[in-house]
Length: 296
Image (tube, rainbow, N blue to C red; front, top):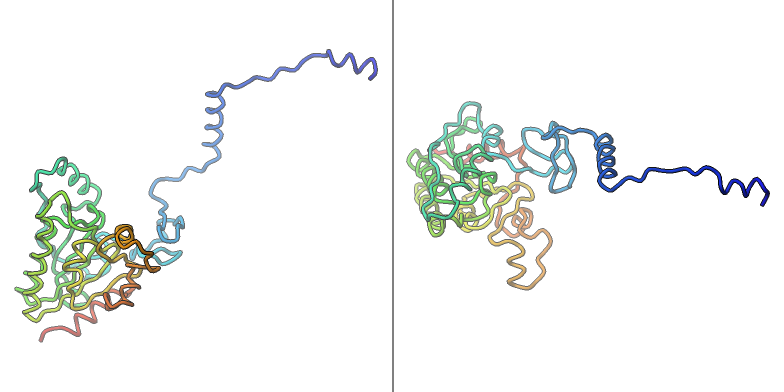
């Protein structure tokens, strides 16, 4: 080592500022916020089937995934818009709202939250309409309202719709979606299974048509009663249809379940569903069924 090199060892030192944890985190957060694009809320949705992130404007009025054709869940208003002749739908029992018959704690708050989320007073909409000029009574359950659970008002509205169809000699179409009976109403919710089924029995005795359209998910007490009583049972593709959930069944029988168990395609293969109909073709399908069974 030369003389000059040894002198360099004692040259001027350089000092570097040391950032403490909080300051370093703040700087990283600022850099991250600048690097990430700002995306307004509500512009994108995620498909739960293919996991794709979809630009909301790509989803048409039929609520289908443009990537895998999965059928997204629809509100009653959206279904009425794609099914009924324009201006033909007249709602029945629109003012009915749920109470708290069992004095279940905080049930009123749960109902209020569901009403704000769905924009509905209860979990089903009923009414009279025309589908390609064919008259019918409609009952459409809504998964956005407490997952379509069946309480006393849901059962009462569906029963009244069936009785209206019987009185006016009209066919009835029920779109089912449900997580089961509403536990906050106890035995009163379970009574709705028998009440709706009895009304449908009188409708059947009058020689009138009953069509069910099973949508995702249709489970619990609704499946165990009026969902499976249709003269014709249709389903949307890949809809979950069953009574108990897969985990409950698997834990009970301690066996592996078949692939696709409880999906519409599995139910069609085993005779629980008459036909699977794509949502874009459902209006034509229902109109043809109503025309074929029209009373003279």
